[in-house]
Image 1 (cartoon, rainbow, N blue to C red):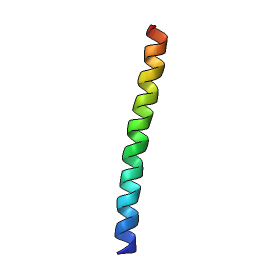
Image 2: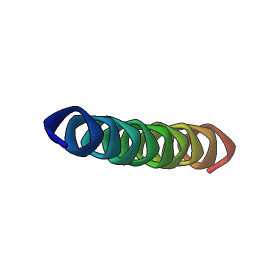
Image 3: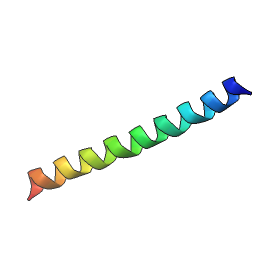
Length: 34
């Protein structure tokens, strides 16, 4: 059960990091174009 919860947390963290990284990249790209 604990391993399952850790797995879910890990997946959610990975997802959040992925979206955050994409947002940062988009901001950098928009800064370059502006």
